[in-house]
Image (cartoon, rainbow over all chains, first blue to last red; front, top):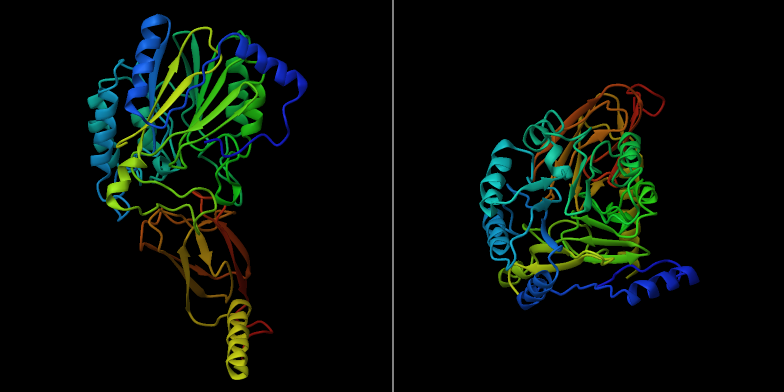
Length: 312
Length: 116
């Protein structure tokens, strides 16, 4: 599952920190979409009244109707049905961008009509596909931008966890990767200043904040600066989309994770001429699309993330 | 075999020539496929119209780094054209996938390289 390891082995100090976590009973669960695992969350929540679960969906690409998936509303529907069927009602949902394929009003409306059927609050960040209208994101900001700063970044607290939604898809530079920009980085530095290092942090943004595969633009130019502001926190979870596949890595206190798309799969890094949509046999498509549910239990360092495909 | 090699070499030379020599046709095509502009570098005479066509399933843009020109997002098979009237080097990229880059070199129509 872990496709990219740390460049250097852990320092002695890091090893000791890890041992401390192990001593306090850290639970890090990633199960490859076996519905039975959801029962584990159920049991854990029953035993841990302070725990809570939220759901991540991503890359709905409403309006995409090519051969790789001619029915993106249908698969988004299926994803929402999975959310509704979760044994524990999630506290809310996050959507990590590319709601639409071409930022058209009808595409946003269609997404809204399907996603709202989950009857959950949804916290969005935009993908690059959501900001390509004539006014560079006016439609997105009208719909999802209330209470946000700049191009749409914001933070909120839920059950003691601090959530930060970042935008890394605007003002991209030729030859570069995703970009947060100075204004957003300053805001982030200020946003986390004065917070207790023991407060768990969840950061979500469209493009991976860590470098997954620069040849395909899968990374964020100034992502390391953002992570620098979060270094002192004991538990940081970074949730992204964009690459339409599950990928994760743990580096010190930071867990990076990308979610599946609800629309179409993309190839593993370097396995195809380009990162474009991947055509798979019709009976395989739903195995490569899905949702992620994330559970936080108090006093546990790492959040438990379970990726569930639309079909096992 | 030798003949085929010679033909291959000739084809390569012609391709090279096509990539580097100024193209005098009034309209020149750039194809966008597999997240790549091709040809990635193109030399044209002033007054030439360059037309980009997106052959990918994913939208792309053609955006000048100096914003001298900027397309709307091009869906599959959409085209964007721009007529280059002023000599110079025009670098551009896809503002959605900025690792996609290309450049157009525009030479004076009546410059020393122009056929007379």
